[in-house]
Image (cartoon, rainbow, N blue to C red; front, side, top):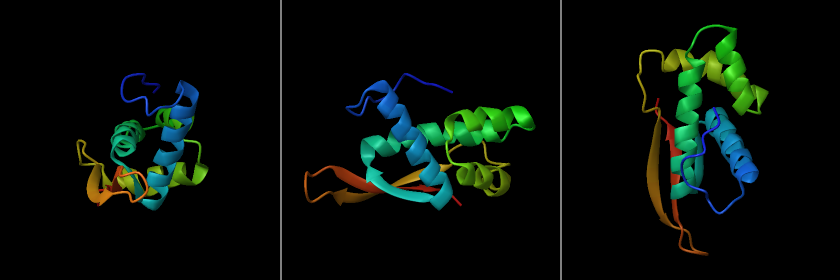
Length: 116
């Protein structure tokens, strides 16, 4: 599920993919994260693809998700809790709520959360 389109976020490719994987794992584990708007948009794209891939049945779906999701606890929650929740939903699993600018540098901050 390696995608090269999208924002570069000022990072080299390997660092960017590690960032997306770890943020997606946090999003799936805690069901919400606080981050900047550009990161949230990229993590939302990545996490939605993971959820859609996990909705497939069988071992192949688990292997696809395991490639891109480092955390075993996030994998377990994805398959045991989130996939049954979103079984009937076709997409749009995330929502970004704008909080306002960060005090230090003025970056747009917000909360990325999973729709329940």
